[in-house]
Amino acid sequence: QVHLVESGGGLVHTGGSLRLSCAASGSIGSLNNMGWYRQAPGEERELVALITSGGNSNYADSVKGRFTISRDNAKNTVYLQMNSLKPEDTAIYYCNAKGTTRWYGPSFDTWGAGTMVTVSS
Image (tube, rainbow, N blue to C red; front, side):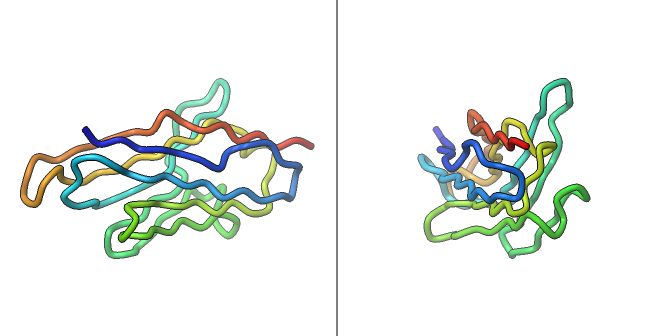
């Protein structure tokens, strides 16, 4: 009932930038934490960045200073600005959102299908 639509993935050279977007739609009463995760070949899925409804953010050490997470609550959308990209950033990036389907209603924990980011040398 709650869906996440991701966009912005693609192929860039080392040092380039990409901006990922994730828009939530469906039966949404409120959005709480939203985040970006990634999974590289042969690796486990890891948290890249998290942002709370209050605007507090956390980042993986590997992306601090290069990535910025933000959100537009009016659009139910979370963004990930990725600068100074490195080949080791190559992965499938997944959006995650937690919230309630109605005010004071059932909670949800929804994942996007993933968008591929490839950084070439």
